[in-house]
Length: 117
Image (cartoon, rainbow, N blue to C red; front, side, top):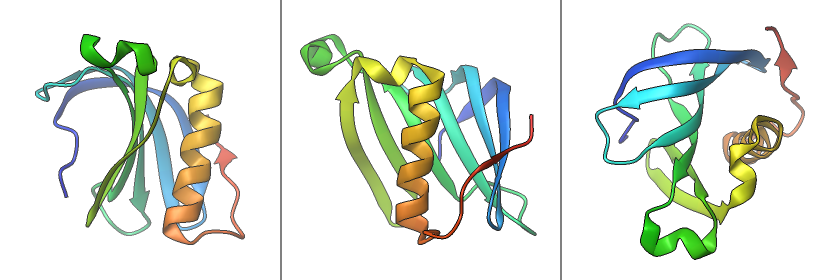
């Protein structure tokens, strides 16, 4: 899996989603060529590293007409851009959509995120 290469980030929110601990990061500095607005990282209980990410990444100028940011999913065997939109700069909309994607991809239809902090 091609995980984001995070150097520093500030946790913004924490959640529990079934057997996953989740954190929403912002103010992200990374070694990647992309600029992240938010990252939702999910860690399965008992593991030490995230295995699932949803990112809000700034679109390059050549794609700015599609929206300021793109929503992308990264997990083992999956690296897929979902949609470009200006909406991904709003933390509420990002979280709602990112969790919806995570629930669908991870097969957690009976789970809902519980905000911890």
